[in-house]
Image 1 (cartoon, rainbow, N blue to C red):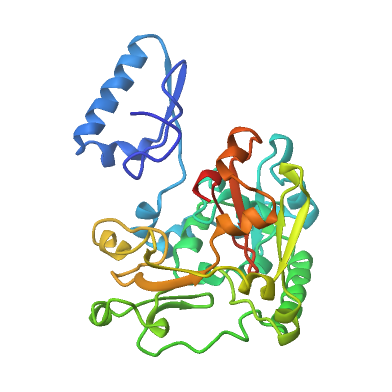
Image 2: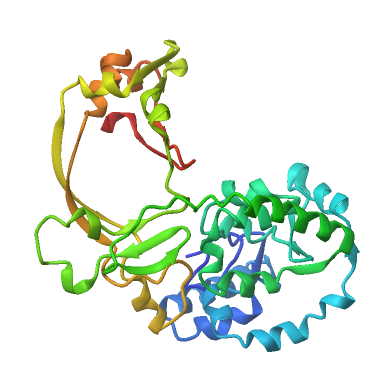
Length: 350
């Protein structure tokens, strides 16, 4: 099995063909795997067929980095002897037109080109910081401070230093940002929750309380956040408008107030939600993973009530979602949340 994605946690390669790449540190990880033997046989066959195999350094995986002595790695990377760059030079390397992707943090310049595709938060998010400092972004996405893994991974991407004058400008920007803490109005949480991070809040239902009742009490429902909880004033709630953009369907934008939505038929559904990382901490016994180290409490059950999406779309002008797909070429319904998160489902599921 070959491809451009991580294989058994440590192997990366281009598709075997005229030319392929193999990380030199991956063989030790692969030699104990039966499937890896099949891969290595394919490598040998490829070379025998006349193709070329290039041995190259690859970015270390979270598992490999987790085993490293961070101080020893830092001592090997003499930042002070690295080239000095300005913010203008960093800004040029924004990933456009085939250019590399540089970012800065704490006065150090990093080349994150090879890491972007594997960014846990998705490449779209990390690219918003391309060619600039990441401090303002981490001020909001504080999950990066929940463990030492981000800094350990970044240590391998350091390529230079940022000028002191430019870092001073960033520090001044951060001082201004910190005067308005986006997490200042977070709601109070139940003290029994097992908290993994509080800004943003990520907490799981205590194991001992998971089966106390079929429906999880609202105060004990697990919390999986990426951003601060949106805070709305009474006026903002009163003036709130849900916008349904049907421009791609030739019908423009339709808006609904909360009062409009409350007048529609309410449907209740009992459902269990589970974070896809539930029980991730169990893997850390064998190899370190990236992400929140959930136990088994990132799962809860509740009765949800509200308006069916199909009813809302019909009122907006989409009479038949399947017809909209087959005849109108509409493939997805995309949701934009007040906190900036986005998700989508296939139109046929509406």
